[in-house]
Length: 427
Image 1 (cartoon, rainbow, N blue to C red):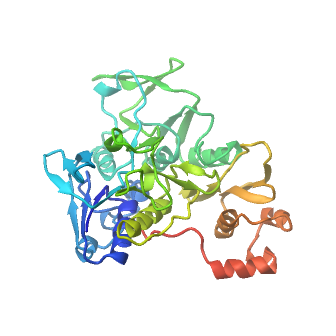
Image 2 (cartoon, rainbow, N blue to C red):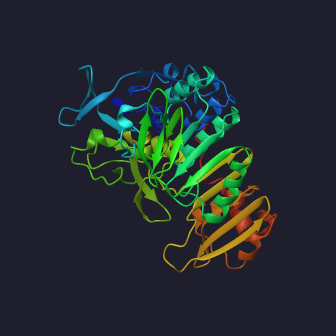
Image 3 (cartoon, rainbow, N blue to C red):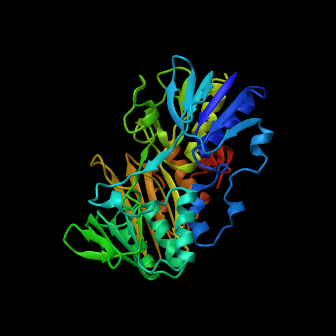
């Protein structure tokens, strides 16, 4: 059996391990546009800030590919997939045959339509090479006014890393507050204050209209006409699933490629996993992209086992984010705001912590936990299992809520079931 995997991150690692769990002999080829073995993208901001070394970035031991008999093709780009011939074609002309193909190409950064940006220098903050380019500029003392477009997860980690290097950072955000994809207004303002205490400046509800660059003046023009000087421009305006390779193929796709419970696309020998795939969302009850690291690994592992012939269903997942800024911890999961109008939202706000719970029909749909983030595993378990929380709902909101606050029968179930969010061992 010949297996080809396009992409080399968490989903790819999961797929290799899933295949080898079933098929110790098949030929595995992994194709990556980057020049590195699989590394932890969540760690790139810590690398820039000097918190981790390069050797700590890699998510498997150096002999991972050799031990799993993987042919790793680095610095190679796939130009097209040819399902009729069961081949993928590389840009340099080489064709690689497959019996089973996994699309694990992830996502790519989005470049907003800004006048003049195509003529000027800017950086993304998504890949190892991006960070190395930024690092070199900073080390050469070429940066005094870093500017970031976008206050999502990527933009905020970029702002933190650069601030830790002693540089003042300005962030421009279209929305009314930071981290709009995972936080509601009140907790977002709490995190914003923590960022501002470390010299990060925010400009909200503005877009970058134009880039002005010259020998004397470097900067951007905002939608209200305001000018902001910069000598390091970072674009962190979101990402898009990389579906360009399958645009012309007869596959169901929306934002990403739709897969079934076996991570299989409409073409039975082509699978997809990770940020490029629309897997099953347990809470939304629909196929959608869930761009989280453990989920990418899980999907890849399930895809790998199915590719090797062991029928294994993916149980689905939901968004879970664990992140922190300047030592201030954040964990969010599931739904964090009212969507259908019949949700109940409970909140507890303290000077250095915040808890928000979203219920529907007495079942926990999601939470936001800031500052003190212990016992988050119990919360995610309540969400995944769809447990009726009516008898202990108020206890969940109290400080110090723990396993002992659950009814005895649920405590036993929890202790038998263990953790519900599978660790990829990749971060």
